[in-house]
Length: 403
Image 1 (cartoon, one colour):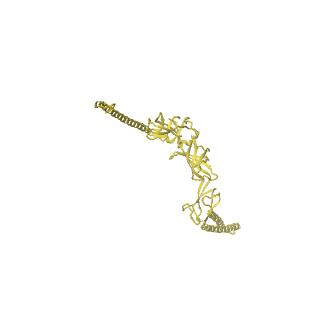
Image 2 (tube, helix red, strand yellow):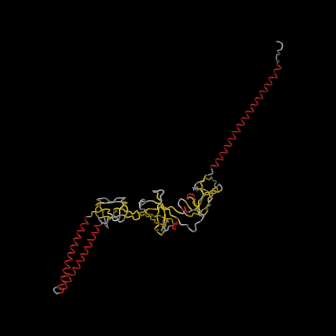
Image 3 (spheres, rainbow, N blue to C red):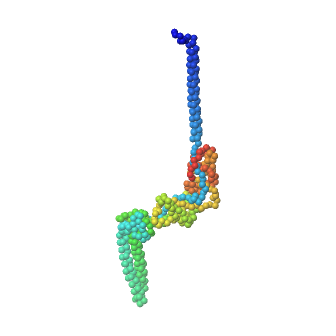
């Protein structure tokens, strides 16, 4: 061993080892404490997030359990609402079937469906040789009767002259005078028979009784036509006058006082979107139909161009006459906002975030809308299409809808 080098002893190494063991133990405890703290933090965060999620779920469930309803505000009943839309049936002003008056075979027809014809225009001719032959025979019988009547009159005149000369007896003279009267009656009967058969022969030609359009042709050339009292009527043509049309509309009894003769009304048809046709009320039945509780009214509409066809379905915009006892502040709501309960008509409204079912009094029924004369306020939020199970006090969310 050299001078300056000191060799550590076992006594000096013991304290150093003790300090190292103490530091190691302290480090282990610190690590354990940190692990426990981290584990606690993780557990706390997990429990807190689960609690928050459960609270959010409960809140969302509570919110979803509150129904959302569409609401509108009622509008005052004004001039625009003072009319009702009623269905009307369009009919030709004159509509008639055309029949044959004489039997035979159709020789020719001159007008088909859709043809516009004038009054007196020839539509068809019928070949009826039996009638023609009967007319010839009747004319021959008339000629014979006229000849016999002339001879009888000559004899009567001659005998009346001879009677003045006392050349013949009074009895013979009276006989020839009576024969003259009888033959004149025979002539009149023959003339009547000829006129009858001439009329029957004139029926071989079918003429249009008025201006109109042919809507049906039910016979063709060569078809057998049977006419007479013992045979069923056979329609040859159907003729309709369409320059002016009749529109029949059934007005509800509650609005029957609005039907005024001479009042101008408007009509619309689906086949003419955006177009309005004008008509005039010309008459009504002056009686309420006990089955439908409606008043039948007729509106005449000019149709010079024939655009509107008979049989069409029209909508009549009937203007209503304001009633003196009608509430000035009446409101109008959609008809689908009504609830029909056993205790009467009801409407659902939202007040203070909850639904209320309130009684109302209905005025006029405009079809898709109804007039409410009592029970509603202009500021009420009326529920559209309310559920039949709606009860007062139910919490709801509102979704404003346009009326």
